[in-house]
Each structure stands twice: as C-alpha cells, then as structure tokens.
Image 1 (cartoon, rainbow, N blue to C red):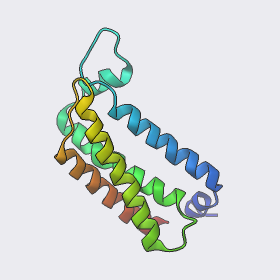
Image 2 (image 1 turned 180 degrees about the vertical axis):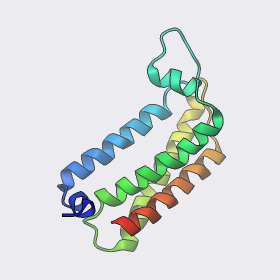
Image 3 (image 1 turned 90 degrees about the horizontal axis):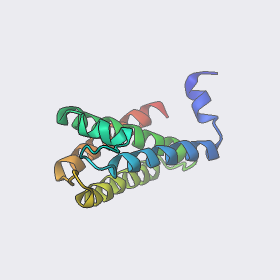
Length: 133
C-alpha cells in the first residue's frame, strides 16, 4: 500500500478530527495577542518575536496545509470541482474572519495583504491536493 493509499484509507472521522484540530490551532494562533507581557503564553512570545517576513511566509504555508486538509477531509465528495470549491470557501472564509477578528486583539491587526497571502496559500494547497488526492 502506498502512502497515498494509506492517507485515503484513514477513516473519515479521523480526517475531520485532524482537519478541525488544525483549524483550532490556526484560531488559537490568530487570536493570541501580539504584544509581550510578563505572563505570556508560548504563542504570544513566538508571535511577538517572529520577524514579519517569516510571519508572511507562515500565512501561505499554514493556509496551504489547511486547504490540503480540507480536500482530504472532504474526499467523500465525488465531484472534484465541488470539493475544491467547498475547501476553498471554508479556508478563505476562516482566513477573512480571523483577519477581521484580529482588529480587536491587542498588538494584532487585520490586513488585506494577509488575506491575499492566506488565499495564495489556499490555492497552492488545493493545487497540491488535486495532484496528490
């Protein structure tokens, strides 16, 4: 059995658990304040001490992984265009919602540029997923 076959043989429930857990990680990272304080969590410290160019690359990589995970979780949808469209909408809507919410988080800000980077990551992840799944 190839690694691809092994990925596709994972029960659907586990695919959803992994995908939703990753969504939870993205939400957790996105709502973490971006200013250092004495009682910082590891996420706060990491965000405050990660160079902006690295943060931008992480937007693309994170949302590429997210889109690929959505494609994997939604593999039961036989229509490839529908699966791609749904994965795209789920990932992009999350990115837009979190960027909007970040406007209320201390030391964070929402940005159209970050939304574009998230969307770029989603498209890259979908392209990879289409060729792998």
